[in-house]
Image 1 (cartoon, rainbow, N blue to C red):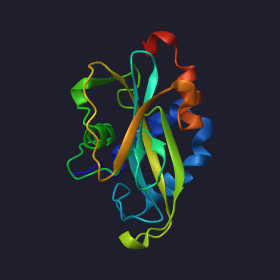
Image 2 (image 1 turned 180 degrees about the horizontal axis):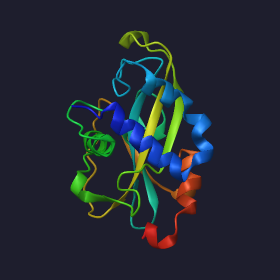
Image 3 (image 1 turned 60 degrees about the vertical axis):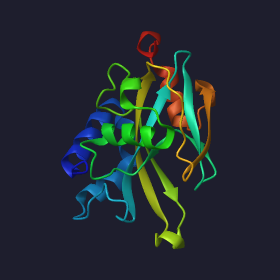
Length: 188
């Protein structure tokens, strides 16, 4: 069963307790949560939840993959699936599916075991081939430390490359700013 509306709401509220100034940015999320539609289903429009894994290596570089659909280098992520018990597990499943990095090769940063580092709302263009109108992704971005080196095995249908970027070159300015604010011991 995919993450429930109650779980998504509780996770968002825990995040907002740390970032209350971001409440206005998350209005699309709370609108989706108030709807009778499943906010974790990829066919819920005009907005639905996605999850990403921000993975740091021992030198604080951030793992990025080149997404074929968008042509962008971003952290691994995607839509929750029925097998995901919660949002964290959706992010971990996407990390494994897209890059072959298993959940036992990473650990959440202290204090971020159940609360995302960032929640981002961004626009997605219409995709007539998939029958999808323009919509928004509400991306719950969880942060992990790589604890065991594993070979990267890309899911070539969706991903065509990867790189480890210094924190200050992370694709998302919001993630970059939040990583810079982490106390050094939490990043080690």
